[in-house]
Structure formats: structure tokens, C-alpha cells
Image 1 (cartoon, rainbow, N blue to C red):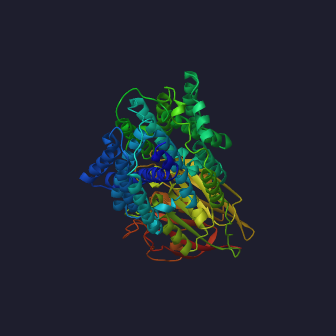
Image 2 (cartoon, rainbow, N blue to C red; image 1 turned 90 degrees about the vertical axis):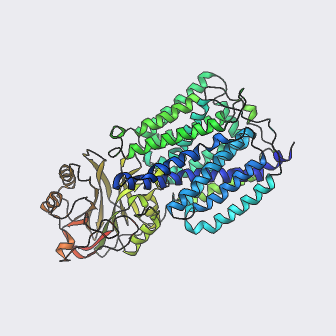
Image 3 (cartoon, rainbow, N blue to C red; image 1 turned 45 degrees about the vertical axis):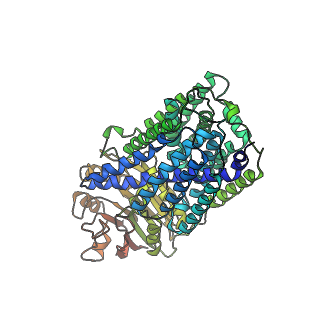
Length: 628
């Protein structure tokens, strides 16, 4: 047995898992940064050469594996590992340009490393990729879906991680691989299937918060279940079980692909426990498919790099079309409500790719049996996950009858210049003592906002509860944050010609009186906003006392504002004779007032607009007393 085969379960495994984890994180970062670039240039303008150059460079980085030599030796892998470690340091700096260039380095070097691993020892590639998926889940769960290693406070630890990785890579560069497990040159279909696997994992199946939002089921329960399911293939018996799902006959592999399609569609269109279980099963099926794809012999000589590059190109296309499903009014209107088609295409690509039977002997063996450290590490990760997602105490609503209600368009967790500022947004809410907050532009697991669940993060960070209304593709919508417990919550989607909007509602008991709070996000100027406000006011009815907050995308005196006033709502700034009322949009040098908290049957005490620049809007907050 060669030295490298003795060392990879520890040192080489650490190196490979680190590189592939960095690669997964870089995928999330690059799409989040590109989102800001595309949003500004397409929606705000003007469009310049950087829009095309930035996307082209991402394409080049994802195609880098096509340059991988057929059997990358340890020295090449060491170079790729070092570049990945150094580039990854930049991702912990909260600046979009720094993150962009760092992510490019990590994507190119990480893709080359994966191609080299497939060419040399695919067993290492498989277990390291699965371990990276599990570790990514753990790091996100520890940060309430916001990866703790992407925060500036993690930077010293990330530098230390990079130093360790560089040192280990230098040591391992002196060891050679044998070529007995070389994958060879797989087919084009294999590459497409790998792209489908990466898309499903990074956009949904490896994100417990996304599964929770798709299904409407408990994140607290789903997070540990998903981690256990993802860790299963790291155990030798688990890998064998996955391979047996696809090994016996063609009909079994066809069934595997068909069942994957069925479970994904069930998760998309159903709700509750059934949808949650379907998506968990889908995760198991995708991992089984990945084991099958990484356990195939190839009669063709050559590097797997070009086919891996093709898979990453397919992954890029899937992500772009998935993004169009969220922003269809501005780009591809026919994509409205068709996010499920993108997931269907990914699942079909995987099903097509596993039609060729696996070769279990190439991946099932384990050099050192069942390592104790794997069991210990898995148990520790599970314990940390359970503690991290355990329900936290919620601060109660004030019992004095005096409350503060706010509205805040949080811009998906970004500020004007696309720094990710969700923590600063939380601090703004906390500093101003808001008890109930209507939130707009709330992402809950999109690739373009670091996969973070804004509502869940803010609720747990602020010791509050959250009622969330998904308006677009399960993962974008509006929400109400609130202290205490609601008597009940409900919502309604509003007729929308362009981006889907809605209104969300929660009722509370305060000083022995019912208080109804409503949050809304309304369409832009080319939307039928009068129809939307009529539907919203119909949903509210004559409930009083009530608050009605949101981004109305309209200014005082407009027909929408007049309709709200006609329904008996009062603008607290006008009632308190604050003249002129402060402007709210944009956050930097605001020039219009489109964010409001209207009240009915309540006595305003004070109202103000904090000068926080954590979002691209300013928060509006109103303090009032419930009339006896």
C-alpha cells in the first residue's frame, strides 16, 4: 500500500474536504455578488462593460477544470489546494469586489482540484465532496443560516485555516498517487448529471432552511435530520447501501431517476410533512446518484476535467434560469411560476446520467475500516446542530399598552453597495426597540443572498417570532417580526401583473385588547396598485385597532394613500405635526417617502426615521398607545 493511501483518510481527506468546502462557499458568494452587479446595471443603469466582463470571468473560472491534466499528481493538487486556501481568505471580507476576485480564484483552483481528484482517486473525491456538503450545513446552522465563516470576525481563523492548508499541501506534494482508481474520460451525460447534482444541493437539498420554506415544516427538526442523511454516505456501509439502490438492473436506475423527479415535484407543489419527507428522500436519492456517478468505469482515456467543466457550465445555466424565475417581470416574463421546471431539468439530467451502472468495487472499500474519528465527528456535528437550532425564548410584548411598530425594506439583507449587512439590520431594529416590524424583500434561502433565511436569522437574533409569506418561488416574500406570541397569523397574495406581492397579518392581545398588525409590499409604478390596495383593504376589513406598514412604492397624496386614508388609517407623522415628514428612499440622501406605518384606532406618541444605512431603504418606526 502506497504512503498516500495510508495518509488520505486523515491529512489528504482534510485537504480535499477543505478545498471542496471552499469551492461550495465560493459558488454561493459569486452568485450573490453577481446579483448585485446585474441588479444595479439592469434595473438602475447604465449598463457598462463590467456587466459582461464580470459574467465572462465567472464562466472562465468554471471552465478551468477543462485544463486539468489527465492524472494530476500530488504537486499539481498541492498548487490547487494552496490557491484555494489563499483565495478563500478574501471571502471573509465583507466587500463585494474583494469577494468577487477571491471567489474566482477559489472556483478555478477548486474545480481543478476536483478534476485532479477524480483523475487520481475518485473515492477521495466522493467522500470529500459529501463531507464538504455536511460541513457547509453545520457552518450555516451555527450562524442561523448565515455561514459563520463568511463574517469578518472569522477572518483570523480563516487565515489560520489557510496557513494549515498550505503546510499540509506542501507535505502531501511529495507523495504520489497510484492510478488504479482513475475515472478516465466520462461522457457528456455524466458531466450534465454532475451539474444537476451541484445545482440541487446548493440551491435546495443541502439547505435545511430552504427545505423548511418549501414545505412549510419545522426548520428545528429538518436541520438535524438533513445533517444525518448527508453524513450517511461517509460511512462505508452507507456508501454501499447507496450504490445498491442503482446497481442491480436498468429498471432500478430508471426508478431512482423517476423517484427523484417525483419527490422534487412533491416538495414544490405540496405543503407540510409530506413535502418535507419528499425533499429529505430527494436528498438521499441525489447522494445515491452522486455515488453512482463517481463509481463508474470509463473505457475512454483522458481527463475527466472537460466533462466536469461542462457540468459546471450546465450548473451556471440552471442557476441563471432559476434567478429568472424570481425576477421574471424584468427579464423573462414567461418564467413566472416556472421555477419547478428548472429543478425538473436538473433531476432529469441526473436520471439520464445514472443509466450506466456503477462499479461498486471502485468506491466501496475503506482503507482503514471504520474510523472512530468519523463517528465522533458526526456525533459532535449533530450535537452542535441540535443546540444551534433549538427553539430560543422570545421576548414578550410590552404590557403597558405602548408599542413600537416599524416597517423595513431590508433589500434581501444588503445595503446600497451590496455589502451583506443583515447583522447591521438586526442592530437597527434592536437599537430602536421595535416590537413589531413589517419586512419587505425577505429572502429565505436563495443562492443570490448567500442562502440565508433573513426572517429566521432576524427572529432568532432578536428573540422574536416571524410570520413569513412567500410570494415568489417559496424563497422570497414579506414577513412580520414580532415579540410575544400571535393569536393567529394569515396572509393573502394580491393580484399582480408583474412580481407577485401580498399582505401578511398577525393578531395580538395587548392590555386585554386585540391588536391587528399588517405588512405589505406593493408593486412598482407600472403595476395596478389601486387594485392591489383595494384587495389589501378588503382583507383588512374594519379591524381596529390596527397597524398597516410596508413599502407602498407610492408617495403621500397618491391615489393609493388616499384610499388608505379613506379606510380610516392615519399617518402618524401628519397626526403628530412632524413637518416635513422624513424621507425614506433611498437610504443615502433620500428623495422620496414611500415607506409608511399607518395606524387606526391608536394614539400616536412619536414617530421617526433612523439614519441607518444598513439597507437601501430607511426604517420607519412609530410609537403609539392603545386607546382604552
